[in-house]
Image (cartoon, rainbow, N blue to C red; front, side, top):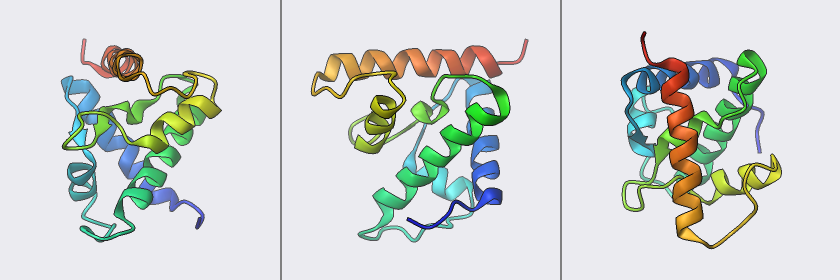
Length: 124
């Protein structure tokens, strides 16, 4: 995979912080649109590329804030209402959620991560 674009990662983080401040979530397509559509969509490579961007945003978020929640939990598939498989693979790599097929466990984890993001960024 190519190296992350630091400006795109930072812009993506700012978008997610804005959504978290409002207590909102967004789809992968909406994130792409918010960023000026840097990833051609629809294309066969879109899911992997937008997922990689979200992984890079997560890593950058933790590095600059020290917060351990996965901010890209706010980004989900339009059909599933959940982040994609790459999100859960990263969660397993970070030892935050073991790999599982349990949909309930995945939904609960995503809800916790979203609530953490909302709490961190909602205006007082």
